[in-house]
Amino acid sequence: MMLKLRHYFVTGLLVILPLFITVYFIFFIFKFIDGICGGFIKAYLRANFGITIPGVGIALGIIIVLLAGFFASHFLGKRVLHVSEQWFLRLPGIRQIYPPAKQIIAFLFSKDKAAFKKVVLIEYPSKGIWSLGFVTNDAFKEAQEKTQEELVHVLIATTPSPWSGFLVLVPKRDIKFLDMPIEDGIRLIISGGILKPEAG
Image 1: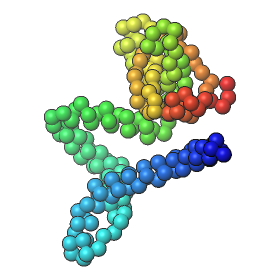
Image 2: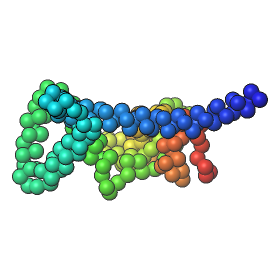
Image 3: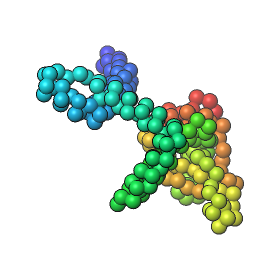
């Protein structure tokens, strides 16, 4: 009887926890954006009319993003944004944060390439120990010339986030390319190896 109860409890957790975490995460993001974008509007409405409108920050945030996209899509907007960006980059500490962040966001939202191109195995951190990685790109030109090798950018992902880890430049001849789909590789990393690929 106790074994059955334990089985039911564990099964229930597997059903409830992912749902709870997903709802909580969406709720957290909603409150975060709503608080940033709608804080002043909510304070004004509360002070003058005694009411609050949930979600007004989300609506305002969407409108701001759409207006920024419209502005940046036209010639005058592009020029103004370029000048503003150059001024922004002169501020202390901004140059170390803003350009990498901009490159990552542009890369993630790019329509013509996937973030991860292939799941691979490489001997890392030492010979005889194999690590799962994701090919992100061919190595940059200077690295290829300095090493006289055909190098590949490989992200050695860390559990539980497949988007964080160590970037290593590996000779292509030392890489074992897998037929595993990208989704299975991501699932393997997130689960810490508990969820194995269905095929292979």
